[in-house]
Image (cartoon, rainbow, N blue to C red; front, side):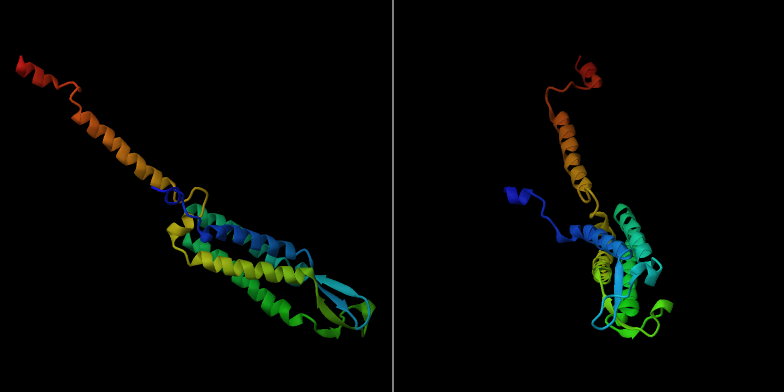
Length: 198
């Protein structure tokens, strides 16, 4: 047997848990970043708004719930938990598409007593793009995880899929030892056979 055949092949799907965790971390961090700066034409920014102010930390809650569901899915091979990861990603993406994307680069009047009748453009900032990356990544990786079977999901954990193979290898070895003992001519004969020969 060649060395290439003996070595286990690396599968791309084993990166899915890492992709889910990274996407959830980006989504969580984006809630504490600036989503928009309100800038009048040809002037500096008058105000800004964070994602937390816009969503009331909803994206952060979804990110945490997605990570918890991911660990449940991998440890128990739970397909419903994997579906929950996908649902968190899809909901996070919908929040971005419906609540944030339409406001990007819009020009309107600032709702601020100190800036009365001042028009400004909602310029996307780093939190806006981080939210897009995190929500899209969590949705894609979560949906990919949810399409797998329970056995495939369980195999994504540390050492997944190795224990059954080890057990199968040990069983023939134990059985072979028993057969060798039975066929060994040097093994002692039963007590009944000695009494008959005498």
